[in-house]
Length: 196
Image (cartoon, rainbow, N blue to C red):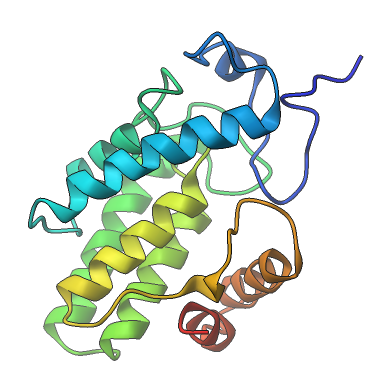
């Protein structure tokens, strides 16, 4: 029997394991739109936390704390790296090392002006979503981190297609296509999408 909360296995969300699903905190959530609303409220609180502090985005502890704050009222695993394999991302044992390597690379790019600031932020955002360090919420985290890094580098926030990228649609499809191009080292479409 399909679960009205978790029966969608599309590009919008990484499928959760049964154990991860059991870590849903609010007991009133039984439908997908209720989950989306609860997560969005929690993300709003995380945005206020980010806006109220000047933080170095290129810090592993900051990234984990940001994810925790984005989802802590909804999921018990918020801020904890995933421990199971996914259809996307690196193997769980590589997460900490790959995240640190992405941070180190972005620091180098910024210090040596390897790329323009927008490209540094978009490349770092892409690296995070490609690593997929958390059970879910990686795309939303990576876009928020991309925005925060752009600001840190003196650039404005990205538009990310000016649409809700959690729900399926034409804009979501363009975003996924841009991510796939970046996966094969063509960052151009993702840079264009980020400023679209």
